[in-house]
Length: 114
Length: 113
Image 1 (tube, rainbow over the protein chains, first blue to last red):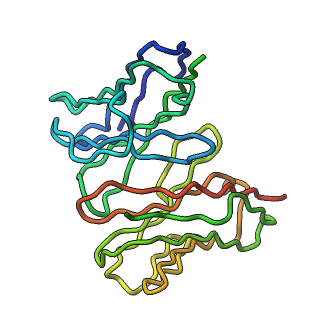
Image 2: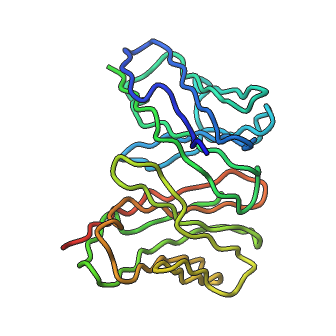
């Protein structure tokens, strides 16, 4: 069974540009969530989608957005990039939306903003 | 707002010894779930162990066990017979039924051969 796939794995952008990251969940998983990981802040929740609907949102500015498609694949977009957006962006999928459901993580997309 | 605190940014343990990672959380909820996730260097994060708050019995998974103290809002992870493959960043996480999951900032565990 294929795991969670994130693309691209590495990317370099400059300030002011925008970026789109993609996440393909494990087959049959309908929940996809996104996280930003930085050395100083640890792992911070961005948003979560279930059946194409955003169910939860973290405390990030509106420059961060996402969506989920009918096949459960998800994308997140960051517009007007800032230096502080440099981070590892992790995607996770789960069979269920709430409760004790185990999260299955991808390897992440490492974004560097210059 | 719920918070998760891991007070030990880094820890080291001798191979084959036992180590305990600390985690405290703050919540006004009574029904929630707690997790420990492991992120090995350059590898995917995986679930180590989870605990439902309504269960009094501490969860155990092979060499990994937790000490869940609901009243104290404490959820520590004990790793017995530490192995080199246990070297990783460990994240404690909290989630109530309908809300987002909240992670602590992590504890980096070094295993000394």
